[in-house]
Image (tube, rainbow, N blue to C red):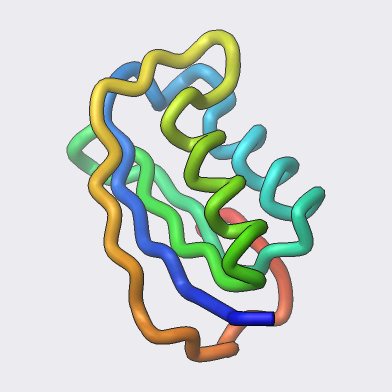
Length: 91
């Protein structure tokens, strides 16, 4: 089992549509650790750590988002797994 870390910045209609709430629910469902937050620029930023297969599933979800959202762009950065998180939280 390969552990990976994914950092994403999501643009579009992603604030005020429960994007963070749904991201937390999906990440926890997949057993991922990390965090999600809104940025001052109207985007959503998140870091996910966990099994590669599950992180990739989370990435696919982020590219669509919850029903009320509209995702225009997802900036993706795979990084070295650090194992620094105990859970998945909102920041």
